[in-house]
Length: 205
Image (cartoon, rainbow, N blue to C red):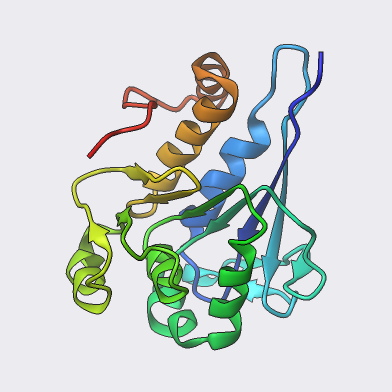
């Protein structure tokens, strides 16, 4: 039986919201199939590949810079103060995200990471969501995006956006369900002692 293998990349930058990236990192890293195979290989990347300082001072050393970053199947673009105040004005990173869209199978965002996807032109004419506190800004700055609120995630096939902070965990379980089935998602949630009593199927909005 052919094994499932998915490479997951998680973008990091200064003042990134901790749980935005740590939540998906944990979910994908913990996931294990019945035969013990781990289907997700998770790595991290920052623009220069040097240590970043996340919100509240946590320091994290990324695995790659954007220059030596390998091809991945899933890219997670988190949010936080760094996304909404600094990286949204970083043309180098925005263009890199745009180029990654040509290679990945699933592009995702957590929280205000959706603003970076929108700035890269990836959400035009699509449904998307973000942290509740940034919904109005999202609509005002990107009127061509169909912004949804009061929902944990929005699945548009090759792009999945999620609400704020902990919603990235919900989104990650949803993606596992899409790719590997609900049984593996439930097993992963049990290992993490995480309650996944929420819709895991594709939500039509």
